[in-house]
Image 1 (cartoon, helix red, strand yellow):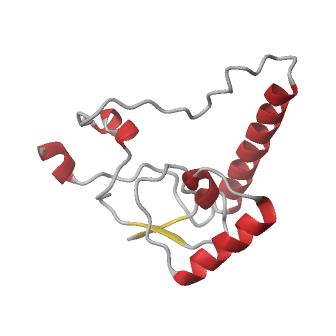
Image 2 (cartoon, helix red, strand yellow; image 1 turned 30 degrees about the horizontal axis):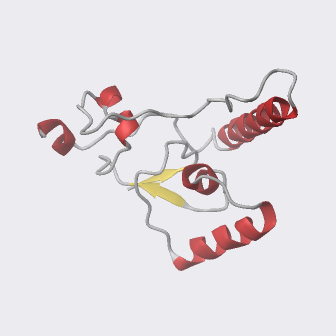
Length: 130
């Protein structure tokens, strides 16, 4: 297992201890709820670990690792609501939230640069045999 300081890669699988669940419930009451991966990965108070090689991956990451996904998938990361034109409040709200989120990620990466290495986690060879 390796320590994660910046987990930005989705919701393929989690194990959450009771203390972590309490932190997430408190965050929900304070900030509201969001998509699982964004909600969990944006809480830098959680101690996060990754099994390596990874034994679970998201379907939209299969092709990146040379694996044929069992079903067709599509990601919506970075997609703006289709009804949001440049002049709409929704567009600017989304853009502002996206910029703030990216700034938080950058700050976290900078704060942990002395104790971490930015790299891709290897996936299990099991996936490639299928």
